[in-house]
Length: 402
Image: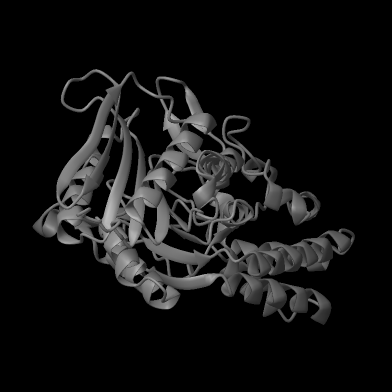
């Protein structure tokens, strides 16, 4: 008599794309040790890992393997991959979705582990002397989904449900918009620099434990990140100054695009009104930009990345401005607020000299106030060459503000 073996049913396939081809290799290796421990703790989660590293041998290589039930499977070692390659990330996404189909996973999430540059991009590969620009990161995820659908038409409906950015500064409206166009449902990320090793692998447990309840899931993800401590005793540090889970529903994102465009157009229309432009500039300047740590240099582009809700709120409440402009700012504030599933911020982040992040309630928006803040590291890192910047007429507002 034939024995029918039930297909495994896991709650989550969690892909970790870890680029250790830089100075973060040793510190972020903790990510994989956490994942192995998490897989033993929660059998509902399987991890698909691609890790480019020189750990152990001093020679760069790429390790690919799965983690499940506390063990390592399907392992292989290759010559080092270019982790800043869009094609390489797309192939990894497709492989993760393949494993999700095989494991019967209900959800698939991808964690990007490396340096991050907000709307500039991330995934810096030193050996390739390259960084993957933000639009290409989102396009690679979309390409990986298409690749899986072509190779596995019986599972063509499977998507990437969420992206966890174990990278600096990736809770931005630009990245959220790009991922939304790629079909991703959620973004879990920080608007500020992360302190390596950053996001703990317990976020995967949080996702698996709260499948079907976005609010509980978001709260659990944020809680796992903000409670994480590295180091010991009085030398311990937290992984993030602020962290968000954003709902990337296309209708909500269209609302953000339209509202931010409306505000940017209203600002641009007041080009000849020196009083109004001065007031808007002062409102935005009252909201400190990101990279609030003591070693931040003046040329860092992220000084112009300001918490969007706080900026729009300051403009909306400015009695010096006309009611139309204030109303446009309020619409933008509410539209961005609708994206925020969960968030937490530190009002005194010790690793950054006690800097306050009380205003970091949600994603950032690129809002420069002088010419020096516009793409100072371009073309390698550019925060303006992306869909959201173009669709929302940000250049027109920039022209009169900066």
